[in-house]
Image 1 (spheres, one colour):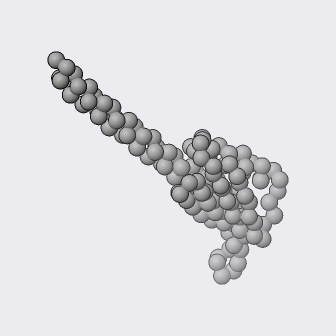
Image 2: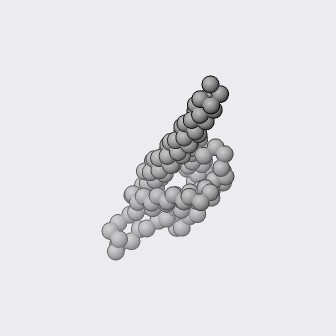
Image 3: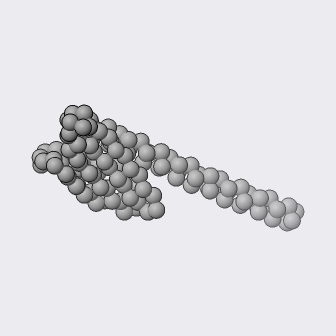
Length: 126
């Protein structure tokens, strides 16, 4: 798993960065066997035109042919990260459950074919 941080007009403390890395490494449980790239974009979107103090966090995940992207904006950086993390975890969990369901469906179909062959073969032997 590779995690890259990209900042724009934000000073990221070592403590916050290590906390973010620790949380993001937990996402590995959903994709144990695949290489995974996580890009974290941290931006300060403060301006009078946009309406105040805003911190944006964008988390992008690439694994295989899939890509998941989540963007959250809040007045606090770590709260925006927490919301974005929940979103990316929810999407990865959904993807993981879908893959498990497809694998089980494949196993059931394979088992049904084997049973049909055994029944056909058993009927011919009798």
